[in-house]
Length: 182
Image 1 (cartoon, helix red, strand yellow):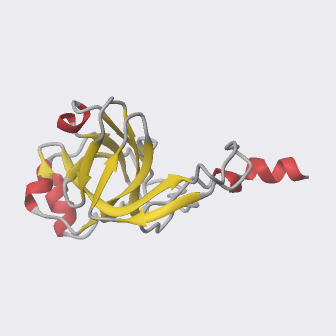
Image 2 (image 1 turned 90 degrees about the vertical axis):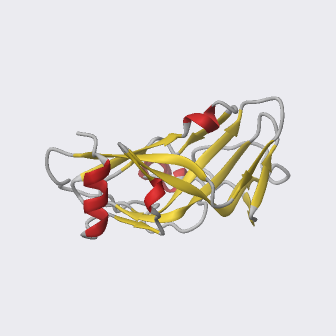
């Protein structure tokens, strides 16, 4: 079941759901808008010949109040907000329609597991032929919350738990890679 604005407000008020900082205008009828942070990562193209699922990816990190995303370019960013989901609520990250209409695709693999805590790393892709300029603090995406039929038996405790700022792929530490070494 998708949570309504009233339920979202109640969960925040009772601190069962943590979203900080948050202003009332961010709460929509069936979602909560999240804002763009100041932390970014881009693949270090000068140090990366090819990316694999086994090797750590090298990134260039930078912080700024504004960012210009060139045409057909990919960039990792973060939300301003730190979130903490209870064990019985999961979330979907969706781009805002107004921004999608500019040709900016926003993703975070689409899903936030129950029990997750941290800032959300966003994958931004400019599908347009012109650069797109973004400013920190602007609403960039929306978090749609859904109540599960019961609390997760094994809530999230993965490699992105408590992440702060934009965080690059950690696929290289997946258990499958350890099995390949045996």
